[in-house]
Image 1 (cartoon, helix red, strand yellow):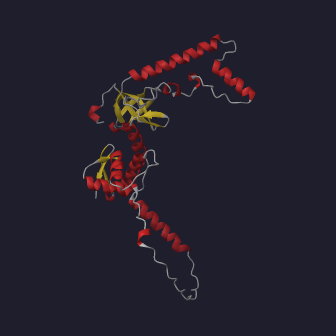
Image 2: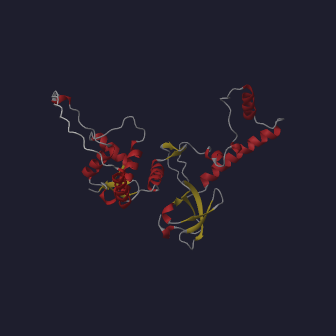
Image 3: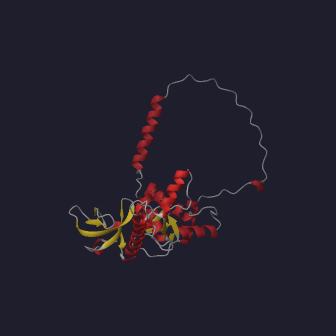
Length: 289
């Protein structure tokens, strides 16, 4: 999101402490960015740049989920007030199982007794993405919540981009220091007498048909696919093209596209301008030569 698109008083989905949350923009910060309020916790936060804001969010779906959770909590409280021992049916069954030394497989935890936010998360529709402000259909489950493909890739990309990667100068300095330390600790030893070389045993030549072709890695296969395509591609498209061209497949992997996405970002962060990949847009890469 760009700075001129941010409105004071509007609510946006933003990354706060490593998680997506709803924030309301209060004012521009004198230190840069904006002062905002976390709508869910009421805490004050500072949004340093417009890139941390994802999209404007609607409160309709969130309000519906909160209302359903509050209604369930009210029902449980009513059961406790009517019960002579102050417990719900599920709590009573769990207490009896604990007293008998067994585990009640049918026991449940009341929503109001769950940690903050879990009761409301349980009200999310499993067929709809649970990311704040996103109403797209869910494609997979990530960190215990349903996610669409784009929100899942955003989570993976943010996790890789936030990790610190040492630059080339730091790597070279570390290598030079390690080499100096090894050289200084070595002691001069008396030269050993030369041993007579053993006669090499002749190796039986293997038939040409037994040689197995060397399998290339997924990263090398992705670079080859992008070079042939000559255009930016997403990680899912690269996986499909690699399989069609017979370069690389992963029948046992559940999310090979996510693994490839993270590997490409690591090469870009480690090699910089010498990387074979170049990021052109969110989730898209092209061959850099």
